[in-house]
Image 1 (cartoon, rainbow, N blue to C red):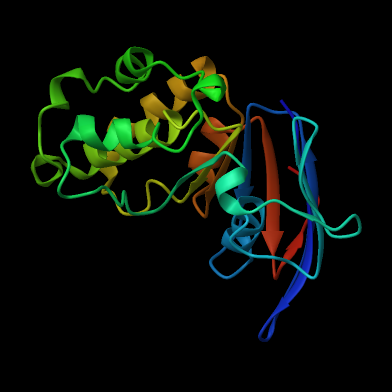
Image 2: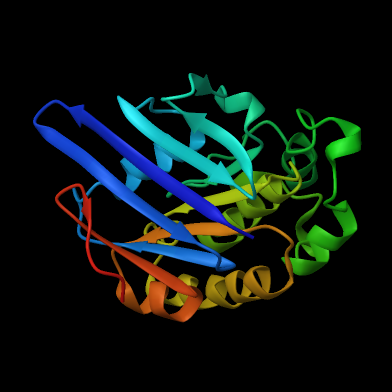
Length: 215
């Protein structure tokens, strides 16, 4: 598992100039609001095209501006879990989970529905509508949907920030299980260091668009 990221670009008055490499199962990006964490995630996902940059995941080049390579988002096979779960309200939990597989070609699928349901303890929720879920349950479903897309990399951008402390403590054990059992590298963003410290094998500190010395 390896991730290499380099991105240099100007966004209005904000200058992003960030680079790091990691071989960890979970790479944590830590820093205050406005430090450029989400911009880095969007570069990795292909949602932001930098003036100069390079993104490589397990030797697969997703972006290399010098070589003229820019894989569009839908071809990068990257799962993205946001601060809000963004579930489809017209689908059940099972429907939301299965939607994650829709855009992944069958030969590229490695995530088993039953394995993901077991990993995230979702079996009792499958027939429920999303309106009947707690915040923590919704985030677990969002994570499951991303995993069932069989991504080569999973991005998690402040996935616990919308939860109260009780719900956070309910979800974190599932994130630890995901780290230990899933076959996918994770880049995890948070401004809460206790989360980063608990989950990450490598920590990338950011401030004012730049990467500081690693912790």
